[in-house]
Image 1: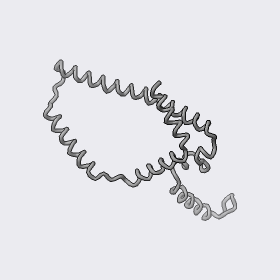
Image 2: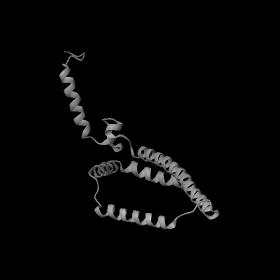
Image 3: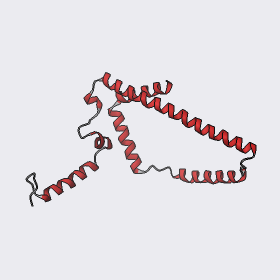
Image 4: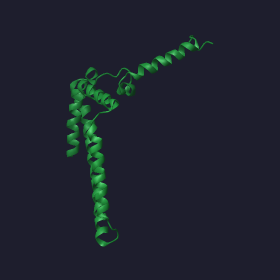
Length: 153
């Protein structure tokens, strides 16, 4: 049975399998951004890289700052309301139960951190990120500077 491209149906299927194998061995950012997206150092000049990194870093830092303030306010306000409710008698805290649960959590943390092994998938992702950062040093520097400015503004 022939397909519109002129090849046999079996050839098309084997091509799909080959593409699946090909994409397994590619970095995640190449899968997302396109096959020809190399490092930004190859495509843009230094000034453009700094501007792109700085603007995206500033936006990220600014949003991070606003969300952080909101989260800190919510957690602090919730803690304050719990203390007021405890002081006025609306709730009673069993401090012995809290202490026992904290001791159990400490034991579990000691047990889990004693192995100190990194999962291979996490290690490979970290290696991919490090390679990306090394290839795009100027863009990364602009992003870091912009992020710090965004956090300060």
